[in-house]
Image 1 (tube, helix red, strand yellow):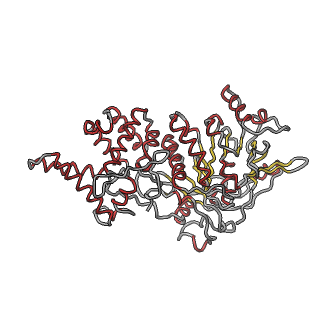
Image 2 (tube, rainbow, N blue to C red; image 1 turned 180 degrees about the horizontal axis):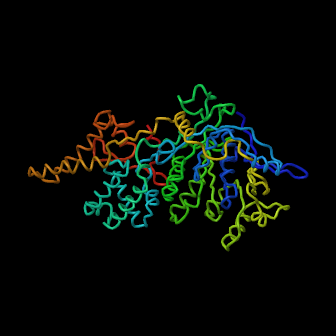
Image 3 (cartoon, rainbow, N blue to C red; image 1 turned 90 degrees about the vertical axis):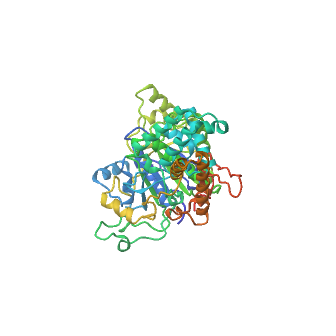
Length: 536
């Protein structure tokens, strides 16, 4: 499939036709889509995703309002849309259904998405729990003690058990790790309880998401006869608008329920971005991105974020370009994005802003000043005059220079505008490239089981008159030997996951093998486990 710049916006003038497109080899220079509610950001997002898919680039985007799933179905021109196209001098697109994979943190509207507690790391988890600096420091100590003790933190009950263990034995750890206050442990436990009540505990566990599953392309055309479910609806990729081989798969995260927990939403998307950053190899400048990542409601990422986290977000955004990933922030107001991040976003689509308040007026001025001037266009005045589906666009040209800002109409999507039916959703899930991979949760032996086992082993030893400390040491030794057995395929936990407990121990914890020398775990820029060794 040839990689060409596909226009997503156009305007006819008396002298020429203006077309705006993102150059494929400049798409990983990131971008920004802004505008007030109801000005057409969702349609712009859908059109951009279609163009990337046609160029063979996989896409990830969150479906905040529940209406992006229509991209999986061929579009049709309604009477209302036909009238608008005629008024603007735009042609109706040929209907196309795009290859789509549905995801859902809660596992209801798409394939489940999970991460282990240890992989999320203390920095992102502290952000999710809204901890202060002192509490976040204690959380980091909890992770450090778990790493040094070879205790796997996979799901929420592991972290709760580890916090309780550290709180109960705080005096034993003070000399080596520093003070651990009961108040901070209590704050962490309360935060975990709130996340559980919001359903966020379903996000933690195994099997953990492999980000490479986001980077799929259609290998061959699908036919209705081969993919239609028995007694069900027609396949979502069937018919005359069947996706062709080489098209990038569009990954859609169901985010309607997730948005009820904005910190979980922001942390989840930031974790995905950090996963891409940590685990994709350096590739330099490609003729097209390996993946385009749309971060909708981007203001949630930066609201009240501590300076240390903002600095690391800036670092990830700046460096993930060399991994072949383009990041596009979608938000209402350009002031929602910190200047250090805003400076990294080369491709701009600005929908209408309303200057009703002083902050709105400041946003209009800021948006105008960050776009390349056009001698024939008053950008500041135009931003407040744009109609629905109109935008000011400035993209990087072939030399990497921002093109002068143009006022254009966003082209209509070739796919369906609006949500799909429950029957179409079920057909998508059944015919998905990852069907059956993530549906069944796993619960391997980890920190909760190990700490619970130490407790139960200590009790009979004390009753028999043996010193409790000796019993505790025996339990620790037994736990390590069990893990070592798992390394070679033995142990009770080996059959419960894709890897034995010992193998997972190597991936996510420090271990001492043969002598009292441990390998310290290495964590990445956002606190997650660094390296590919854990993916087996």
